Image (cartoon, rainbow, N blue to C red):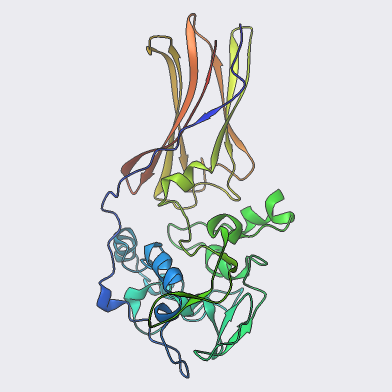
Length: 325
């Protein structure tokens, strides 16, 4: 009997399920810091539009977050990361919460304000504001990200130690390499016409990809199969993320291993649950292993991973299979 040597990845795109609400346009003012002549969105429209689609922009208005803080006695313990002032000012420690403009979430200034200047990978000269080159940008360091994402607060589990122990981290990879993929484009645009200004440079996406994007989540998993031998096989659902998954107590991944016949009939199945609490999570560079006694007449071994958030099933985010010829 011959087995196919390749694995089929089938990430499934999900429609919005109403879990995220947009901040009203008039509640994202992003006023310039003292001494600047424009707001961020005037000269960095592409970046602003990407950020606006991200969970960073909705870190305060997200209904899951709003429901969670209503259940907490010390709500203020969440504010420093959901509505931070300058993260650079206290990194690698948690930032301080700002006093207002909560609906703007994690703003441009939250991550790019360095004193009274704007930090970035180049420190380019501009008349709009003073710029400074800083080691936290350009994919050189995870410090800025881990100032918040290395914290255990309420349902949120820290990722710093998990990431630091990986081969990816030890080889120099950072959070940005996966969550803010690099690309090339002009850094700014003409505030009047919107046309790009300056030469194309190495930059990073500001969509800040995360678990709300099913296509991105699919990259966290892979299927490896050993066997069959003597009527048995072992399926390995591998964690390809740079940290444990999931990392939120109210987030779960329902894993279902199945074996089907040629006509599609299910001959065998087993369900496993990955949870964001202290148990049943999948550590970085590890796998969820499932032994299978293959029934007579089997054709396909398959794994399907469904994403569950706060008790709601958001549907499949990863499917892979291996077939017998």
